Image 1 (tube, rainbow, N blue to C red):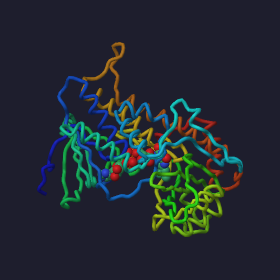
Image 2: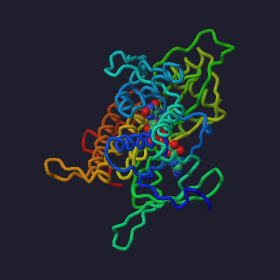
Image 3: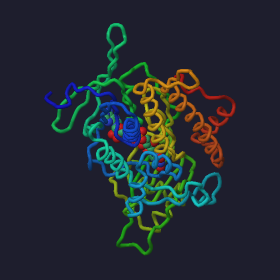
Image 4: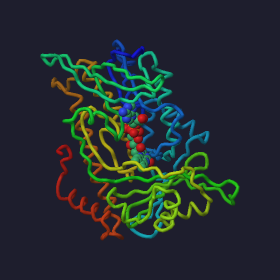
Length: 419
Ligand SMILES: Cc1cc2nc3c(=O)[nH]c(=O)nc-3n(C[C@H](O)[C@H](O)[C@H](O)COP(=O)(O)OP(=O)(O)OC[C@H]3O[C@@H](n4cnc5c(N)ncnc54)[C@H](O)[C@@H]3O)c2cc1C
Protein backbone atom coordinates (compact mmCIF):
# COMPACT_ATOMS: atom_id res chain seq x y z
CA UNK A 1 0.00 0.00 0.00
CA UNK A 2 2.10 2.79 -1.29
CA UNK A 3 0.04 5.80 -2.18
CA UNK A 4 0.01 9.54 -1.74
CA UNK A 5 -3.59 9.20 -0.46
CA UNK A 6 -2.79 6.49 2.04
CA UNK A 7 -3.74 7.60 5.57
CA UNK A 8 -4.54 11.10 4.31
CA UNK A 9 -6.96 13.14 6.32
CA UNK A 10 -9.83 15.10 4.74
CA UNK A 11 -12.36 17.39 6.37
CA UNK A 12 -15.20 16.17 4.14
CA UNK A 13 -15.38 12.85 2.32
CA UNK A 14 -18.06 12.58 -0.39
CA UNK A 15 -18.74 9.06 -1.66
CA UNK A 16 -20.03 9.21 -5.24
CA UNK A 17 -19.26 11.62 -8.06
CA UNK A 18 -22.67 11.55 -9.79
CA UNK A 19 -25.03 14.54 -9.89
CA UNK A 20 -25.47 14.63 -6.09
CA UNK A 21 -21.79 14.20 -5.20
CA UNK A 22 -20.42 16.80 -7.58
CA UNK A 23 -23.15 19.36 -6.76
CA UNK A 24 -22.45 18.89 -3.04
CA UNK A 25 -18.78 19.64 -3.63
CA UNK A 26 -19.59 22.67 -5.81
CA UNK A 27 -21.95 24.14 -3.20
CA UNK A 28 -19.47 23.55 -0.37
CA UNK A 29 -16.80 25.23 -2.45
CA UNK A 30 -19.07 28.25 -3.13
CA UNK A 31 -19.75 28.62 0.59
CA UNK A 32 -16.11 28.40 1.60
CA UNK A 33 -15.20 30.84 -1.16
CA UNK A 34 -17.64 33.45 0.11
CA UNK A 35 -16.86 32.99 3.81
CA UNK A 36 -13.66 34.29 5.35
CA UNK A 37 -12.46 30.99 6.64
CA UNK A 38 -9.71 28.51 6.07
CA UNK A 39 -10.50 26.10 3.32
CA UNK A 40 -11.17 22.54 4.36
CA UNK A 41 -9.92 19.57 2.36
CA UNK A 42 -12.69 17.83 0.44
CA UNK A 43 -12.46 14.57 -1.47
CA UNK A 44 -14.93 12.98 -3.91
CA UNK A 45 -14.48 9.23 -4.36
CA UNK A 46 -16.11 7.54 -7.35
CA UNK A 47 -15.70 4.05 -8.65
CA UNK A 48 -16.25 5.07 -12.26
CA UNK A 49 -13.42 5.89 -14.58
CA UNK A 50 -13.81 8.25 -17.53
CA UNK A 51 -14.93 6.71 -20.82
CA UNK A 52 -15.59 3.27 -19.39
CA UNK A 53 -19.36 3.54 -19.46
CA UNK A 54 -21.07 4.41 -22.71
CA UNK A 55 -24.44 5.34 -21.36
CA UNK A 56 -26.38 6.00 -18.14
CA UNK A 57 -30.15 5.92 -17.73
CA UNK A 58 -32.01 9.06 -16.57
CA UNK A 59 -31.93 11.88 -19.12
CA UNK A 60 -34.92 14.24 -18.68
CA UNK A 61 -34.15 17.38 -16.73
CA UNK A 62 -37.23 19.60 -16.40
CA UNK A 63 -37.15 23.38 -16.86
CA UNK A 64 -37.68 23.70 -13.09
CA UNK A 65 -34.02 22.69 -12.70
CA UNK A 66 -32.75 25.92 -14.28
CA UNK A 67 -32.62 28.07 -11.09
CA UNK A 68 -30.66 25.32 -9.32
CA UNK A 69 -28.28 24.90 -12.28
CA UNK A 70 -27.77 28.67 -12.31
CA UNK A 71 -27.14 28.94 -8.58
CA UNK A 72 -24.51 26.21 -8.85
CA UNK A 73 -22.87 28.07 -11.74
CA UNK A 74 -23.34 25.22 -14.21
CA UNK A 75 -26.29 26.40 -16.30
CA UNK A 76 -24.23 28.14 -19.01
CA UNK A 77 -22.07 25.07 -19.64
CA UNK A 78 -25.12 22.79 -19.94
CA UNK A 79 -27.09 25.26 -22.04
CA UNK A 80 -24.13 25.85 -24.40
CA UNK A 81 -23.77 22.10 -24.88
CA UNK A 82 -27.48 21.92 -25.70
CA UNK A 83 -27.15 24.78 -28.21
CA UNK A 84 -24.42 22.75 -29.91
CA UNK A 85 -26.66 19.68 -30.05
CA UNK A 86 -24.70 17.74 -27.41
CA UNK A 87 -27.89 17.68 -25.31
CA UNK A 88 -31.40 18.13 -26.69
CA UNK A 89 -33.95 20.62 -25.45
CA UNK A 90 -37.19 18.95 -24.34
CA UNK A 91 -40.34 20.79 -25.34
CA UNK A 92 -43.00 18.76 -23.58
CA UNK A 93 -44.45 15.46 -22.51
CA UNK A 94 -46.88 13.14 -24.23
CA UNK A 95 -48.76 10.47 -22.38
CA UNK A 96 -51.08 7.59 -23.04
CA UNK A 97 -52.23 7.16 -19.48
CA UNK A 98 -55.76 6.54 -18.26
CA UNK A 99 -57.16 6.33 -21.81
CA UNK A 100 -56.06 5.29 -25.30
CA UNK A 101 -55.66 8.92 -26.32
CA UNK A 102 -52.28 10.54 -26.74
CA UNK A 103 -52.27 13.72 -24.64
CA UNK A 104 -49.53 16.31 -25.00
CA UNK A 105 -48.38 19.07 -22.67
CA UNK A 106 -46.12 21.79 -23.97
CA UNK A 107 -43.35 23.49 -21.99
CA UNK A 108 -44.56 26.77 -23.48
CA UNK A 109 -47.05 26.75 -20.60
CA UNK A 110 -44.29 26.14 -18.06
CA UNK A 111 -42.91 29.20 -16.24
CA UNK A 112 -39.38 27.77 -16.56
CA UNK A 113 -39.67 26.94 -20.25
CA UNK A 114 -38.14 23.97 -21.98
CA UNK A 115 -36.16 21.29 -20.19
CA UNK A 116 -33.32 19.06 -21.42
CA UNK A 117 -32.89 15.56 -22.74
CA UNK A 118 -29.34 15.10 -21.59
CA UNK A 119 -26.43 13.10 -22.74
CA UNK A 120 -26.23 11.99 -19.14
CA UNK A 121 -22.55 11.03 -19.07
CA UNK A 122 -21.58 14.35 -20.65
CA UNK A 123 -23.68 16.18 -18.04
CA UNK A 124 -21.93 14.39 -15.17
CA UNK A 125 -18.50 15.00 -16.75
CA UNK A 126 -19.36 18.71 -17.05
CA UNK A 127 -20.16 18.90 -13.34
CA UNK A 128 -16.91 17.17 -12.40
CA UNK A 129 -14.96 19.36 -14.81
CA UNK A 130 -16.32 22.47 -13.07
CA UNK A 131 -15.08 21.05 -9.76
CA UNK A 132 -11.66 20.34 -11.29
CA UNK A 133 -11.27 23.66 -13.10
CA UNK A 134 -12.52 25.94 -10.36
CA UNK A 135 -11.74 24.25 -7.07
CA UNK A 136 -8.94 21.73 -7.60
CA UNK A 137 -6.76 23.36 -4.92
CA UNK A 138 -9.23 22.21 -2.29
CA UNK A 139 -11.18 19.36 -3.80
CA UNK A 140 -9.52 16.10 -4.76
CA UNK A 141 -11.37 13.74 -7.09
CA UNK A 142 -10.41 10.08 -6.86
CA UNK A 143 -11.85 8.10 -9.76
CA UNK A 144 -11.69 4.37 -10.39
CA UNK A 145 -11.94 4.10 -6.60
CA UNK A 146 -14.57 1.79 -5.13
CA UNK A 147 -15.46 2.20 -1.46
CA UNK A 148 -15.48 -1.23 0.14
CA UNK A 149 -15.67 -0.40 3.81
CA UNK A 150 -16.29 2.52 6.11
CA UNK A 151 -16.76 3.01 9.80
CA UNK A 152 -16.98 5.71 12.41
CA UNK A 153 -14.24 5.36 15.01
CA UNK A 154 -14.65 7.08 18.36
CA UNK A 155 -12.19 7.63 21.16
CA UNK A 156 -13.01 6.44 24.67
CA UNK A 157 -15.00 9.49 25.77
CA UNK A 158 -16.82 9.55 22.39
CA UNK A 159 -15.67 13.09 21.68
CA UNK A 160 -13.26 12.54 18.85
CA UNK A 161 -15.13 10.87 16.02
CA UNK A 162 -13.53 10.06 12.69
CA UNK A 163 -14.65 8.27 9.58
CA UNK A 164 -12.32 5.68 8.15
CA UNK A 165 -13.00 4.88 4.52
CA UNK A 166 -11.38 2.01 2.66
CA UNK A 167 -11.47 1.77 -1.11
CA UNK A 168 -9.86 -0.17 -3.89
CA UNK A 169 -8.20 1.78 -6.65
CA UNK A 170 -7.89 0.68 -10.29
CA UNK A 171 -4.61 2.32 -11.21
CA UNK A 172 -2.56 0.59 -10.00
CA UNK A 173 -4.73 -1.97 -8.30
CA UNK A 174 -4.47 -1.53 -4.53
CA UNK A 175 -6.41 -0.88 -1.32
CA UNK A 176 -6.28 2.56 0.30
CA UNK A 177 -7.60 3.97 3.56
CA UNK A 178 -8.32 7.63 4.28
CA UNK A 179 -9.81 9.48 7.26
CA UNK A 180 -12.34 12.26 7.51
CA UNK A 181 -14.37 14.32 9.97
CA UNK A 182 -17.54 14.46 7.90
CA UNK A 183 -18.90 11.83 5.57
CA UNK A 184 -21.54 12.45 2.90
CA UNK A 185 -23.03 9.47 1.09
CA UNK A 186 -23.88 10.36 -2.51
CA UNK A 187 -23.45 6.83 -3.83
CA UNK A 188 -26.94 6.65 -5.35
CA UNK A 189 -29.31 3.75 -4.84
CA UNK A 190 -26.48 1.58 -3.63
CA UNK A 191 -26.31 3.72 -0.52
CA UNK A 192 -22.88 2.52 0.67
CA UNK A 193 -23.30 3.87 4.16
CA UNK A 194 -26.24 1.61 4.92
CA UNK A 195 -24.23 -1.50 4.14
CA UNK A 196 -21.42 -0.39 6.44
CA UNK A 197 -23.53 0.93 9.31
CA UNK A 198 -25.82 -2.00 9.94
CA UNK A 199 -28.18 -0.15 12.27
CA UNK A 200 -28.99 2.45 9.61
CA UNK A 201 -32.26 1.52 7.92
CA UNK A 202 -33.17 2.46 4.39
CA UNK A 203 -36.80 1.78 3.80
CA UNK A 204 -37.83 0.51 0.37
CA UNK A 205 -41.46 0.91 -0.67
CA UNK A 206 -41.80 -1.32 -3.73
CA UNK A 207 -39.95 -3.62 -6.08
CA UNK A 208 -40.03 -1.58 -9.25
CA UNK A 209 -37.42 -2.50 -11.88
CA UNK A 210 -36.52 -0.64 -15.07
CA UNK A 211 -35.52 -2.40 -18.32
CA UNK A 212 -33.77 -0.10 -20.74
CA UNK A 213 -32.59 -0.40 -24.32
CA UNK A 214 -30.85 2.22 -26.43
CA UNK A 215 -31.69 2.52 -30.13
CA UNK A 216 -30.02 4.23 -33.05
CA UNK A 217 -31.79 5.46 -36.17
CA UNK A 218 -30.81 3.35 -39.17
CA UNK A 219 -29.40 6.17 -41.33
CA UNK A 220 -29.28 4.03 -44.52
CA UNK A 221 -32.99 3.43 -44.23
CA UNK A 222 -34.13 6.85 -43.18
CA UNK A 223 -36.95 8.36 -45.15
CA UNK A 224 -37.63 10.96 -42.43
CA UNK A 225 -35.92 12.27 -39.32
CA UNK A 226 -37.23 11.82 -35.79
CA UNK A 227 -37.69 15.33 -34.42
CA UNK A 228 -40.08 14.54 -31.57
CA UNK A 229 -38.47 16.08 -28.50
CA UNK A 230 -41.28 15.18 -26.12
CA UNK A 231 -40.93 12.45 -23.52
CA UNK A 232 -43.60 9.83 -24.19
CA UNK A 233 -45.07 7.85 -21.28
CA UNK A 234 -47.36 4.90 -22.08
CA UNK A 235 -48.98 2.52 -19.63
CA UNK A 236 -49.85 -1.15 -20.18
CA UNK A 237 -51.35 -3.97 -18.14
CA UNK A 238 -48.06 -4.97 -16.49
CA UNK A 239 -46.45 -1.58 -15.91
CA UNK A 240 -45.44 1.41 -18.01
CA UNK A 241 -43.03 2.60 -20.69
CA UNK A 242 -41.21 5.79 -21.55
CA UNK A 243 -39.15 6.85 -24.52
CA UNK A 244 -37.08 9.98 -25.24
CA UNK A 245 -35.04 11.18 -28.18
CA UNK A 246 -31.35 11.60 -27.26
CA UNK A 247 -28.45 13.32 -29.03
CA UNK A 248 -26.64 11.37 -31.80
CA UNK A 249 -29.93 10.14 -33.34
CA UNK A 250 -30.45 7.80 -30.41
CA UNK A 251 -33.67 6.95 -28.62
CA UNK A 252 -33.99 5.34 -25.21
CA UNK A 253 -36.89 3.01 -24.45
CA UNK A 254 -37.55 1.91 -20.86
CA UNK A 255 -40.11 -0.50 -19.41
CA UNK A 256 -41.04 -0.60 -15.70
CA UNK A 257 -42.63 -3.41 -13.75
CA UNK A 258 -42.32 -5.06 -10.32
CA UNK A 259 -39.59 -7.62 -9.79
CA UNK A 260 -42.06 -10.33 -8.71
CA UNK A 261 -44.40 -9.72 -11.68
CA UNK A 262 -41.91 -10.42 -14.44
CA UNK A 263 -43.30 -13.92 -14.92
CA UNK A 264 -46.59 -12.36 -16.10
CA UNK A 265 -44.93 -11.01 -19.20
CA UNK A 266 -44.03 -14.43 -20.54
CA UNK A 267 -41.01 -13.08 -22.36
CA UNK A 268 -37.32 -12.94 -21.53
CA UNK A 269 -37.19 -9.18 -21.84
CA UNK A 270 -33.48 -8.94 -21.07
CA UNK A 271 -33.01 -10.27 -24.60
CA UNK A 272 -33.19 -7.45 -27.13
CA UNK A 273 -35.32 -9.41 -29.65
CA UNK A 274 -37.87 -10.32 -26.97
CA UNK A 275 -37.88 -6.73 -25.68
CA UNK A 276 -38.68 -5.53 -29.22
CA UNK A 277 -41.53 -8.01 -29.50
CA UNK A 278 -42.87 -6.92 -26.14
CA UNK A 279 -42.88 -3.27 -27.27
CA UNK A 280 -45.04 -4.26 -30.26
CA UNK A 281 -47.43 -6.23 -28.04
CA UNK A 282 -47.91 -3.72 -25.27
CA UNK A 283 -46.94 -0.18 -26.31
CA UNK A 284 -48.50 0.94 -29.59
CA UNK A 285 -47.15 4.48 -29.45
CA UNK A 286 -43.60 3.52 -28.47
CA UNK A 287 -43.62 0.90 -31.24
CA UNK A 288 -44.59 3.60 -33.74
CA UNK A 289 -41.31 5.46 -33.16
CA UNK A 290 -39.25 2.30 -33.55
CA UNK A 291 -40.96 1.41 -36.83
CA UNK A 292 -41.35 4.84 -38.39
CA UNK A 293 -37.74 5.86 -37.91
CA UNK A 294 -36.17 2.42 -38.42
CA UNK A 295 -34.55 2.32 -35.00
CA UNK A 296 -32.25 -0.60 -34.27
CA UNK A 297 -30.91 -1.56 -30.86
CA UNK A 298 -27.35 -0.55 -30.00
CA UNK A 299 -27.09 -2.66 -26.86
CA UNK A 300 -26.57 -6.41 -27.01
CA UNK A 301 -28.58 -6.91 -23.86
CA UNK A 302 -31.35 -4.95 -22.20
CA UNK A 303 -30.09 -3.21 -19.06
CA UNK A 304 -31.99 -3.85 -15.82
CA UNK A 305 -31.73 -1.42 -12.88
CA UNK A 306 -33.73 -0.89 -9.67
CA UNK A 307 -36.29 1.92 -9.88
CA UNK A 308 -38.06 1.54 -6.54
CA UNK A 309 -38.95 4.31 -4.10
CA UNK A 310 -36.76 4.36 -0.99
CA UNK A 311 -35.78 6.69 1.82
CA UNK A 312 -33.03 7.18 4.37
CA UNK A 313 -32.63 10.48 6.14
CA UNK A 314 -29.12 10.54 7.62
CA UNK A 315 -25.71 11.32 6.16
CA UNK A 316 -27.11 10.94 2.65
CA UNK A 317 -27.74 13.10 -0.41
CA UNK A 318 -29.40 12.42 -3.77
CA UNK A 319 -30.69 8.93 -4.51
CA UNK A 320 -28.90 7.59 -1.49
CA UNK A 321 -31.24 9.71 0.66
CA UNK A 322 -34.42 9.45 -1.40
CA UNK A 323 -34.97 7.41 -4.54
CA UNK A 324 -37.97 8.17 -6.71
CA UNK A 325 -40.02 6.18 -9.17
CA UNK A 326 -38.81 7.37 -12.63
CA UNK A 327 -42.43 8.38 -13.40
CA UNK A 328 -41.68 11.53 -11.39
CA UNK A 329 -38.77 12.64 -13.64
CA UNK A 330 -37.55 14.48 -10.54
CA UNK A 331 -34.54 12.35 -9.55
CA UNK A 332 -31.75 14.62 -10.80
CA UNK A 333 -33.50 17.81 -9.72
CA UNK A 334 -33.95 16.39 -6.22
CA UNK A 335 -30.35 15.16 -6.24
CA UNK A 336 -29.18 18.72 -7.01
CA UNK A 337 -31.52 20.38 -4.50
CA UNK A 338 -30.60 17.96 -1.73
CA UNK A 339 -26.92 18.45 -2.58
CA UNK A 340 -27.28 22.22 -2.24
CA UNK A 341 -29.19 22.06 1.02
CA UNK A 342 -27.07 19.23 2.41
CA UNK A 343 -23.87 21.15 1.69
CA UNK A 344 -25.35 24.25 3.35
CA UNK A 345 -26.36 22.21 6.40
CA UNK A 346 -22.84 20.75 6.71
CA UNK A 347 -21.26 24.18 6.30
CA UNK A 348 -23.42 25.90 8.90
CA UNK A 349 -23.33 22.98 11.34
CA UNK A 350 -19.58 22.32 11.32
CA UNK A 351 -17.70 25.26 9.82
CA UNK A 352 -19.64 28.38 10.67
CA UNK A 353 -20.01 28.02 14.43
CA UNK A 354 -23.71 27.06 14.36
CA UNK A 355 -26.65 29.20 13.36
CA UNK A 356 -28.94 31.25 15.61
CA UNK A 357 -32.39 32.45 14.60
CA UNK A 358 -34.04 34.85 17.07
CA UNK A 359 -31.52 33.80 19.70
CA UNK A 360 -32.32 30.11 19.30
CA UNK A 361 -29.57 27.73 18.21
CA UNK A 362 -30.61 25.86 15.06
CA UNK A 363 -29.24 22.45 14.13
CA UNK A 364 -28.84 22.72 10.34
CA UNK A 365 -28.52 18.97 9.86
CA UNK A 366 -31.86 18.42 11.57
CA UNK A 367 -33.41 21.00 9.25
CA UNK A 368 -31.91 19.12 6.28
CA UNK A 369 -33.34 15.82 7.50
CA UNK A 370 -36.76 17.42 7.86
CA UNK A 371 -36.48 18.67 4.26
CA UNK A 372 -35.72 15.12 3.08
CA UNK A 373 -38.70 13.74 4.99
CA UNK A 374 -41.07 16.43 3.69
CA UNK A 375 -39.85 16.01 0.11
CA UNK A 376 -40.47 12.29 0.31
CA UNK A 377 -43.94 12.71 1.82
CA UNK A 378 -44.89 15.11 -0.97
CA UNK A 379 -43.52 12.75 -3.59
CA UNK A 380 -45.46 9.76 -2.19
CA UNK A 381 -48.70 11.73 -2.47
CA UNK A 382 -47.99 12.87 -6.04
CA UNK A 383 -46.87 9.43 -7.18
CA UNK A 384 -49.99 7.70 -5.89
CA UNK A 385 -52.15 10.43 -7.46
CA UNK A 386 -50.66 9.78 -10.92
CA UNK A 387 -50.83 6.00 -10.68
CA UNK A 388 -54.43 6.30 -9.58
CA UNK A 389 -55.28 8.13 -12.81
CA UNK A 390 -54.72 4.89 -14.73
CA UNK A 391 -57.77 2.67 -14.12
CA UNK A 392 -57.87 0.64 -17.37
CA UNK A 393 -56.10 -2.35 -15.78
CA UNK A 394 -57.36 -1.94 -12.25
CA UNK A 395 -57.57 -5.71 -11.77
CA UNK A 396 -53.91 -6.31 -12.70
CA UNK A 397 -51.61 -6.71 -9.70
CA UNK A 398 -49.20 -3.96 -10.77
CA UNK A 399 -52.00 -1.40 -10.77
CA UNK A 400 -53.92 -2.84 -7.82
CA UNK A 401 -50.85 -2.37 -5.64
CA UNK A 402 -50.52 1.25 -6.60
CA UNK A 403 -54.22 1.98 -6.22
CA UNK A 404 -54.16 0.48 -2.73
CA UNK A 405 -51.18 2.69 -1.93
CA UNK A 406 -53.21 5.67 -3.09
CA UNK A 407 -56.08 4.70 -0.80
CA UNK A 408 -53.59 4.31 2.10
CA UNK A 409 -51.96 7.66 1.35
CA UNK A 410 -55.35 9.34 1.48
CA UNK A 411 -56.22 7.62 4.75
CA UNK A 412 -53.05 8.31 6.69
CA UNK A 413 -49.78 10.17 6.73
CA UNK A 414 -47.17 7.55 5.90
CA UNK A 415 -44.38 7.20 8.45
CA UNK A 416 -41.42 6.31 6.26
CA UNK A 417 -38.70 6.41 8.91
CA UNK A 418 -39.77 3.21 10.69
CA UNK A 419 -38.70 -0.07 9.18
C1 LIG B 1 -34.96 3.91 -15.16
C2 LIG B 1 -34.65 5.24 -14.56
C3 LIG B 1 -34.94 6.38 -15.27
C4 LIG B 1 -34.70 7.63 -14.71
N1 LIG B 1 -35.00 8.75 -15.42
C5 LIG B 1 -34.79 9.97 -14.88
C6 LIG B 1 -35.10 11.14 -15.61
O1 LIG B 1 -35.51 11.08 -16.76
N2 LIG B 1 -34.88 12.34 -15.00
C7 LIG B 1 -34.38 12.44 -13.73
O2 LIG B 1 -34.21 13.55 -13.23
N3 LIG B 1 -34.07 11.34 -13.04
C8 LIG B 1 -34.25 10.12 -13.57
N4 LIG B 1 -33.90 9.00 -12.87
C9 LIG B 1 -33.32 9.16 -11.53
C10 LIG B 1 -31.89 9.72 -11.59
O3 LIG B 1 -31.11 8.98 -12.48
C11 LIG B 1 -31.30 9.69 -10.19
O4 LIG B 1 -32.17 10.34 -9.32
C12 LIG B 1 -29.92 10.35 -10.13
O5 LIG B 1 -28.99 9.56 -10.83
C13 LIG B 1 -29.44 10.51 -8.70
O6 LIG B 1 -28.13 11.00 -8.71
P1 LIG B 1 -27.10 10.57 -7.57
O7 LIG B 1 -25.87 11.35 -7.83
O8 LIG B 1 -27.76 10.64 -6.25
O9 LIG B 1 -26.83 9.00 -7.82
P2 LIG B 1 -26.08 8.29 -9.02
O10 LIG B 1 -26.35 8.98 -10.30
O11 LIG B 1 -26.46 6.86 -8.91
O12 LIG B 1 -24.53 8.46 -8.69
C14 LIG B 1 -23.91 7.71 -7.69
C15 LIG B 1 -22.42 7.69 -7.94
O13 LIG B 1 -21.82 6.97 -6.85
C16 LIG B 1 -20.85 6.10 -7.36
N5 LIG B 1 -20.72 4.96 -6.44
C17 LIG B 1 -21.68 4.07 -6.08
N6 LIG B 1 -21.18 3.16 -5.22
C18 LIG B 1 -19.88 3.50 -5.02
C19 LIG B 1 -18.83 2.95 -4.25
N7 LIG B 1 -18.99 1.86 -3.50
N8 LIG B 1 -17.61 3.54 -4.28
C20 LIG B 1 -17.39 4.65 -5.04
N9 LIG B 1 -18.35 5.21 -5.82
C21 LIG B 1 -19.59 4.65 -5.80
C22 LIG B 1 -21.36 5.69 -8.74
O14 LIG B 1 -20.29 5.31 -9.58
C23 LIG B 1 -22.05 6.97 -9.23
O15 LIG B 1 -21.19 7.77 -9.99
C24 LIG B 1 -34.14 7.74 -13.41
C25 LIG B 1 -33.83 6.58 -12.69
C26 LIG B 1 -34.08 5.33 -13.26
C27 LIG B 1 -33.76 4.10 -12.47
